[in-house]
Amino acid sequence: AQTVTQSQPEMSVQEAETVTLSCTYDTSESDYYLFWYKQPPSRQMILVIRQEAYKQQNATENRFSVNFQKAAKSFSLKISDSQLGDAAMYFCAYRRPFYNNNDMRFGAGTRLTVKP
Amino acid sequence: NAGVTQTPKFQVLKTGQSMTLQCAQDMNHEYMSWYRQDPGMGLRLIHYSVGAGITDQGEVPNGYNVSRSTTEDFPLRLLSAAPSQTSVYFCASSYGRGHTEAFFGQGTRLTVV
Image (cartoon, chains in turn cyan, red):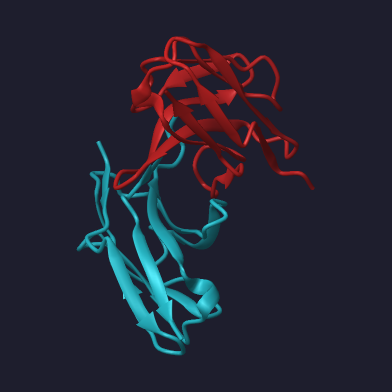
């Protein structure tokens, strides 16, 4: 079974600085999808960024970018110019494609604090 | 667009009671699923459905039932609530078989006393 590991239960960053959240996963598949979700105190799950495993180029979305290392099964999230609104729980998630059982597997989450 | 709508947002049950968590989506998504979120464990899949009339078990299905009679609705039933089912429950939907992200409802905080 696929597993997703986030080794940092908590992280903090100074406003305007850069922070990197780590995620590793275990899979025997060659094609899959990876996601970072943000969960603010409102509890809503918000997609931050998505990466297709067949793409070598790292995904970016404004201040958010990933470092996808397929051989190492690593998928870290970099937040640049951190803002107070970035404070939230961040979940890394893995999903298989084109199978009936294509459930999304989540890591345990990293709580990010942004200090003014 | 309403997206994924979950009701209720909060619920307190007594041990042994039953209830249904409602989930509806208006995006014509094939795939719907239910997760529970517990501290330190992320989100774990309870049940999922790949289309109307088709459901299957996820990682933690015991104590829960689902059905999918329409594309839009995917209710989750707690048959006999137990304190171990105290959790936050999320319903999610997505287009097809895994090539897109999941869209989530706002969650239901359930407490079983």
